[in-house]
Image (cartoon, rainbow, N blue to C red):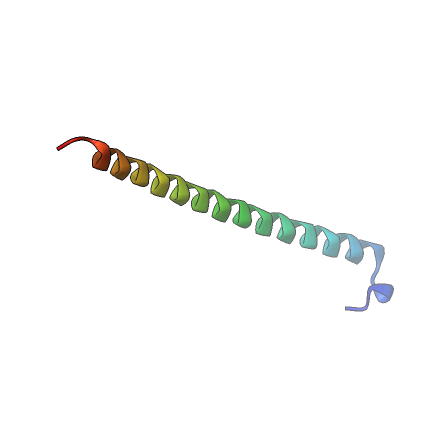
Length: 58
């Protein structure tokens, strides 16, 4: 793609497409981070429950 030969309209369209693609990638990254955080929190919750179960007298 030769930017110098593009019309102003083509530049605008390309810029918008790139921005939309970046937004989509950002949303996918946030979703992935949220899923990872949920898994981590669930793991910690299970560890606490296990620890509490071990501390109770038999």
